[in-house]
Image (cartoon, rainbow, N blue to C red; front, top):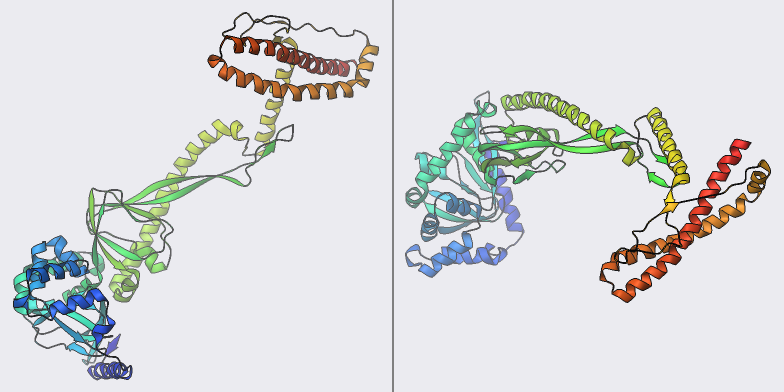
Length: 513
């Protein structure tokens, strides 16, 4: 947003009048207790601050983003030296802290509040206007450019609300932080100017952009964001590598079936799905990622995690990226790059999907009988026919099964269920009249067989239970179990004879007819 110098002054007066109409008292009563304590210490003379004061101030300011970076990138001593020499100042809403062209003699750290930065630019008809380039809030700092380069202020700073600052004088700033801040700013400008997206940007605009970037550190396999999450920022790799991956879903058509007895084997309607996570790209130093979703207002289309032992990444929020990246060259670069990214991603994704489909086919065909699913109706009919034939062969084998006779005694008390067996002998009528009579009695025979099968189901449960506990029985309990087994085997014997006889006689009756 652009303003003339007159409009800036008018805006400042309007905000000041708004503040006056609010009829507020001293700002300190409106700030949190921790900030109040910081303010009280900063109001004391730097030369009279005791070691206890300095330690308290260091503890209170350690979580402020500016000082957190100082501790991480320099040392604790630099932080304590700042606490020794910092002073306090406050500005009301609408007040201008300094104007472009003023002599720079202070460095400001925002404890509470918000400011806007306006940079003078010239229009095509050579008129000077003020362009808003940044909004800074708690934890940010400003005013270092004029101190580091010993030049007039390059921007106008105006408070948008009642704000409280910790301030370092020029000499103290240069002595404590000068070299560090100079190196940090130059490194950032050099890094961004080497990227094609920012190659056309001036150093002053890149310096202003530095206010919106924060440096984040990630460790190996740490998740940066996940597929499907809201897109909240754009990332630039400073060092290390990250890997971008995408969930690829492979689908197969499937049919469901119900067996002859009406029991559901497993019903899968529509499609069978299998999800694979495929790595699509690795981003290294100087590469930008996450901007595609931000520019198109999409959720994350891929997941991202740290690939190396450690990675440092510059991060800018979605809102500030859209506000600040307005250069036509940059937008054109991002749009063209995103088109290429999409083509490459689709090609790689398609190739990976084909590979996984082949693997899925092998697994699917190998386990289809277990899942009872088929790709086509023809496959379903063929497999059901083979299942019916197998069932028929199994039923025929019942005629020749061998069973234990109930009259036999158990010869091995240590294993009462391991016994000798003898052939099953069945006698059937040879004339058709007898078979006709058998057909009439078929219903009662089926009912009798069904009742005995239900009774035998309970006896099987008893058998399994005693068999599991047999190793812990004493001699008397074993003897009791053996006698009970005789009764159980007798029931099984009778049931098996009735069931087998019924199936065999019905089959013979059909042949005679």
